[in-house]
Image 1 (cartoon, rainbow, N blue to C red):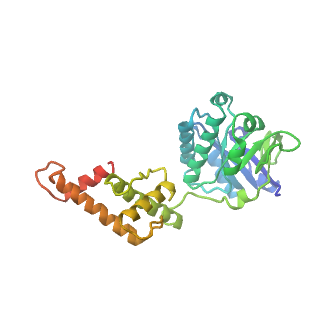
Image 2 (image 1 turned 90 degrees about the vertical axis):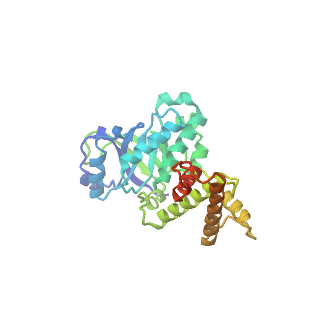
Image 3 (image 1 turned 30 degrees about the vertical axis):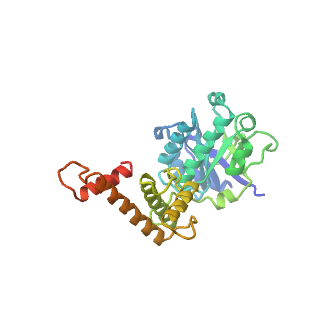
Length: 315
């Protein structure tokens, strides 16, 4: 088990001398990026802390304090956090800080789903994500076991030892560190993997991961047209942004429609080409059935075919 010293800071710590912090043996820090559902609620010192801590060689994660009232609001908070991060590279996860007393009335199930919604939104944006809270919340207001299986856990408990298994333990709010005026939160990172595997940045368009995402999105757009034309029965929605169950099911149906001998969920250029041909044939059939002049300009031409494609795509 690792025992890596770590601090977490916000605007309440004021101006920090990060070189002194690093020299004092604190090479890891979690910065508050902001709070709530708007990027305007960015922590006042976040940009400065990020820049100066990076320059000093400190490995960084961030946290976002939540006031969310439902799952949709949690997603809004996640998107606000993403806006604040602006593709910044992090060495550790983005933690969803859940401790606001006004949220407890929402209940364990709803709060757990809100945590998942926030974390999954950050993960889709290319970041690692985890949940921060205290024993009271992990006992009474969050499904700790479910969250522990999915995300890193940052536990705040000012005690002789943590009473929940966690990746990061915040054990004091009364720490003293050179380079910081006043008290600072003290942590120990037990799981070094959240540092080693979490140096992440949102996927850039020319990376293999981004190409895979774009290829999957193109396939799904074709499958949605195929659904609208009756070629497949499964509607692939934008939230199935990876090649998940919906996409796999629609691919199998497409292969069956095309008469493939082995209707698996595998995808190759032949399938794409054959499916595109089938969609085009269906569009042509629809065009002829509807007397051709779809856009009402008095003639039948490529503009009408384009208009049908837009309608099929839901535009």
